[in-house]
Image (cartoon, rainbow over the protein chains, first blue to last red):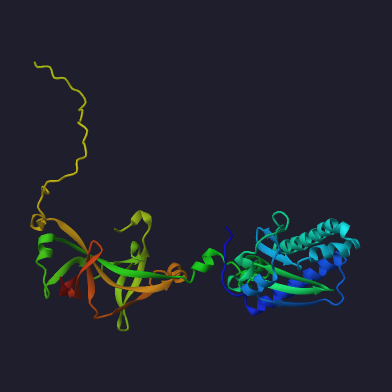
Length: 259
Length: 101
């Protein structure tokens, strides 16, 4: 099942989508000799009411990056074919309809190709899914007039995002080497002193006010840990103003590791 | 002279049985009174970045986040069990307990 994405497409990207689809429509109509001297394009985000009212019997084309629908009115598929083949009699209606469908398939394919992939199979008349009719699912439509031919193209959110990616996704952040990214990461170092050993009996009797004497001399080195694990260095307890401080003495190698 | 036959020991398989009886050894810490445990004292910590960590050399100073007179934490097996004031007892460190459970 196709992923359904929610939310309106922002105005900036709607304008970009309108321009892109209008350009594809113009190019397509020029290639198919439709003539569109008086073409005017307008675009609108589709509402469910609009779609249900106007777009019965749309051609739906599905590709790896999303779906689109093309609607040209109740008889206009045939009308496109009549125009292309200069057919005037009803006897050649089937030929006209076939030509019209080929033209619409080509338009659908050109939009899918712009999104980066060919459509899966040809366009076919189907019931419109919510992802193509409801603005709250991110559906978007461009309405155009090609001469006297009205035409509406609907695209779903997935296809819209492929055609006009969000700015951050389109540009992408420049990658930095891991070593460089890590250089400013904060780590916590702590200073501990191995105080010594006591037996549990002595520990059990320990009370406030008593003084526990360490096995460690005042000038014995202390241990520096990173993030509470492993000793990485030794140092001596000193002062820095009113704060405790450690002056480093040496590093601890794996061969000389304190527990 | 008696002849003794030497042969490998054959141990019986230890079959697991969920014990339903009471523990054999009562929980009495007094019987462990002679057991020695290691204590550590945490003096403080500091946040530094990775670059600085790997640039540190002998004689460099790391200022900790603890005041000179702030209590230090006494740890047993990594768990804080008491707090105290660090002091000098002769030429050794000492810890005067100010808080213990």
